[in-house]
Figure 1 (cartoon, rainbow, N blue to C red):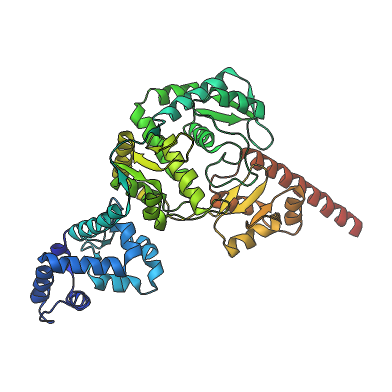
Figure 2 (tube, rainbow, N blue to C red; figure 1 turned 180 degrees about the vertical axis):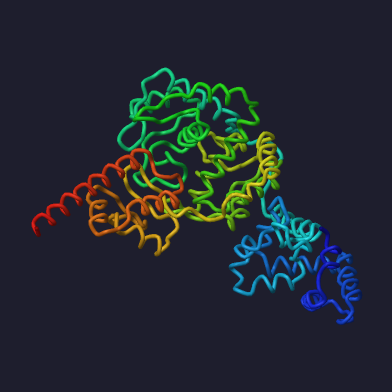
Length: 465
């Protein structure tokens, strides 16, 4: 809906508040006069620019995010989340400011909306500011890295390797190092296998594999192509044939969506970054200036600094996905330039059409590691209080980390806590669920603890008799 339609459906008190907020002179008791006065001001280029600048100054954080959204209507809970930084009465003030309106249909799923022309004007304001802040170059850098669709090539390499070898899993749920070394030698893009101890949040297998391989492996598991069962890895041939028969663009789009879903937990504003990069596409962009534009949407994540998130989790992964290419002016210098590829433009545009905005905005609370460690991603004292009966705290640098073992399970059951309810809560709050080896051992430990408790109870009863 456009601004004139939204104003026409607004009540007189709402129009009065909007006119007062925008400092538009009018007859305050005439709906027609208020409406016409606001529209006349909006149609005046200078007045419209004044309104937009005021909105973007007063509501910068929320409008910066809204203009990147592929839709203009929002649920009340969603808008409340966007307006949270502005205080408890932010919704009422936003409705009085003149850029947010209530949909005339009370039964609609998205009752709050930004008029199309208001959205477009604010979008143009921000886009002009963003474009003025990035440094561009017209020619190609001397040294360019572009992986195109090599991630799909390496997915096929992974499937072929698993099909032709006896690939088994360690007790932590990872492939043995010998298999990893052989597999990495076959990959089109090689990665170092040495990893730091603390790795979680960016996919189910990020604890065990390098970033790119972890994404490929997790994607293969999600598609059902790779199956982990009874400590062994195998290929589901029917699923693989079905996947391989799809068009390349379809496969790449599914892979990009998998990346967004996997990485959005630790980087909640990742979809906004991707939408911003699409709007700044075309020429080569200086990486430093581009990062400064994306800075409001970036955050540190435990062991990753903001720079790590930007360079490793976004720039490098977009290159792996074929969405972007990077360039430098010297062969051994770090990348200095960034460009969205034509393939990337198409993928990101399709992502907007499908709208990644429907993904859950809530950050996951837990990551359950295959080594029986639970890492709290979003600190929540109530959740940690519920976790406490069946875990023990472990020392960590800045992390809220716990470990569940046989004796902690036995202790919780012995003290009368509901283990099944606890396990269901952990599964519900975990980003990637409970790993298979952990799930299996939890059941064994719980059964053993219950059996021990029953024996002790019978023994106590007999002694009393």
